[in-house]
Image (tube, rainbow, N blue to C red):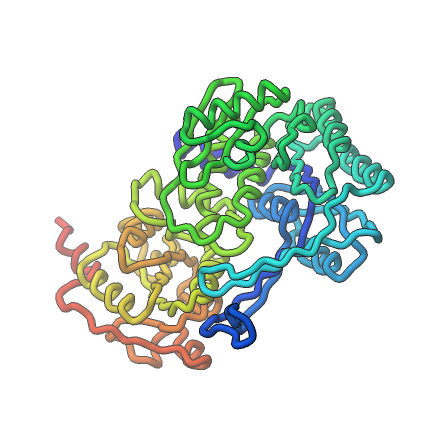
Length: 487
């Protein structure tokens, strides 16, 4: 297997790829609320709605994953003539990398999945959908659009959610067209009859799907490999990647069998993890990656996504951060994130009722004073986010000889501390943009500042947030440490 340097180089190439994605799109709606009592009308919980959001799901989430990885996406699907379709068009339109072709079928309803969530627990899912195959005319339009997009594409994804967009006949025809064009075909399969996937380059069933399709029990690495080999041989499928949740992944290819361990982390939600896997695989293969490197990258991406709530994605910077963390052998969950991902994580914590704190600094050489201020800040909240000055920012603030440690090393050390839940690097001289994006409940700073000197204090107080001035430990400073080290 490849080392992280090769995989980091591969991430840089993903933005140069173009992938064609076709399949069942749906609208995922999430309703978040609080449950504190049982209804007097029936023995069911009463959910008080706190917030709602919507995102594209199904094949749409595959396209979204591709876009955040930097790939250009030709996305083809079928929608109804309804408001849900309009909402999907608007959501997809937020991604410049996605060129979408939505075929309108006035006889169909756009699929909607609505989830009601209280804290970490999903209470109910309501599906509005039609699952019969699209008619011949719509099918012909779909195939025509896909075939027109294939020349020059690096991969074709068939995201089969068994909602009728991809019939057995259209799948067979699209696999043939892609093979003729020399374009690898990656399929997220459904159902038990895999004959329609014959000729595919790679399929990505989960453990349950593989059990049902192979009619074999899967209980360990060997049984997973045996079932995958049976499927590949029986149906003429090139390669099989089995996703096995906490047991990781098993890749059965022409080169042999590889088992990829899952990275240990707190799992919030597995929704959309399969979409992340197939998108990362396709983008990597389109970039010229080997199958095992593509699988390794997909395994890392899936580990990031299950640590988020909702139908989530993993971008290249998050994957790169996870690979670097593995290199440094830092225990615990991935903590170093770009601002966009950090904002999503903070929102997830808030939906669970957690109080979020924020502090910032250069933290060039960690000393007991730093450890104390971080521990006291963390004691005032449920989760602590640290804004860390990037190297250029430190140089402007501290001089040309600083920092002593580069930003990757400082972030790695910071992320290893139990008192720190999240680290976000920033290039600016102050963390005001981070504070405004994250809206912390507690803004902490050393007591050598006054409240009116704390950057972002006025903003945090404007919505009822707390300013915490933490007493400093005497006798500790980075500058003093560096001076004592000088010859």
